[in-house]
Length: 428
Image (cartoon, rainbow, N blue to C red):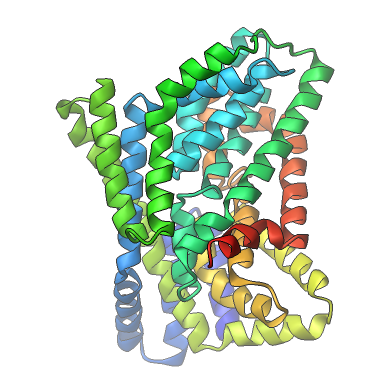
């Protein structure tokens, strides 16, 4: 009875166009009212929302968001794009590879796929059009490659998964994201090269060690941020939350050094970060209340029992979970999806011998694909808006790139070592 009310109310509200945070919060409250009177039910939901945000680890999110905002306006993106162009600009379909590599670099440093889609797409996309690439193909490459920043650390969503999983090491998750993230980028580059060859998209860049060295030196201060943040966390110098504050300070000083950010720009930059953080935190609060409701009604244990009786084969169970998460990602934003479905599927994964760190990367990679699909794919809408085209026109060039991401997901699922080798190397 309770699960039917939870699911139906959520679907109806979503179909009516209600914001996702309200869909989650209202459906959780309605479900609670079935078990207890309305006043205690609403009070309990409010308490769970407040408790869900009472976490020191969550302080890293507003800091990393602010760091991303500063990077977007402080001249860091242009230097990373120049470096990427010197490395892969001479390959067949050169600017497509530049887009992918720049998105990986900028997304990894900023931790935001939306920021990467906006910053890189706005610069490289126009250059791709000038060199004869179709606008839709340029947008498709930008959209899919921007999601790699959510897998390659530092990543806000990996911090959210750590919270939802009950304390999986953030340092281990950050280390686990490198190889799968690079794999996604590599497969996207392979597909882009094949399409470029078929469409006759040629490269006008030339390979030069001198140019690589010059652009590397210009981009080095930006790249050092990765060493400071990830190195500091892995070495135990500071926590992920402290690392996020260090990232803000470093980006601020670097942007002032580049003279592309002034004191007058700070209020609007901070307001942009506050707006983004508010959206993320209200999603976290309502999602935590729904997770608590599901635990209260024993929904996760029921689903765990059902899946474990469906098959004895861990691969079959993981394929079922992947299919469910792919479907969820189409209709739900990444943050609430992680908070709601981690308590449901993580016990199943651990029961069949899947490492929680490995499962976290699988889940994030699944949901990254959902960011590129309508009707709620935030990266899709940003990428289309930056390119000045429509979703209908972008879908066709997106399909082969979707296939590349699905292949990466399958490989990461079947080869645990891609996610667990680096954490194990550092003792996590």
